[in-house]
Image (cartoon, rainbow, N blue to C red; front, side, top):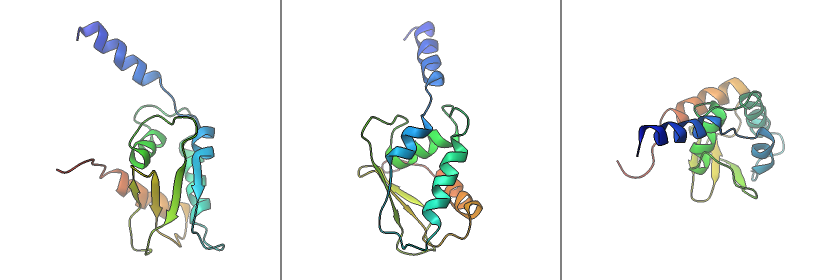
Length: 128
């Protein structure tokens, strides 16, 4: 690849933005207790992370890659957000089924953000 082609490809990647509204529309919350505030904390966090256009390395894009395996969100995509089996779990994701598992009963948006930051900091795909 010529240097100019590599630069053009990089510029296209940097110009891509993630639509906050598209991400919010894609979220489907299943299996949560009515009094569990974790889903609302997650929605609030997604909205805060998407308040300004997400850059390639922004939190919203990183969340998309972690939850779906892709930095793009095709129309009609559904990301199912479910409670993990225990509150001791870090958030986890199954990219093949586009499922995100969050610890139930998370006390605050800050606590959820901290656990998501830990999970996002350990992104790996495949067998290492």
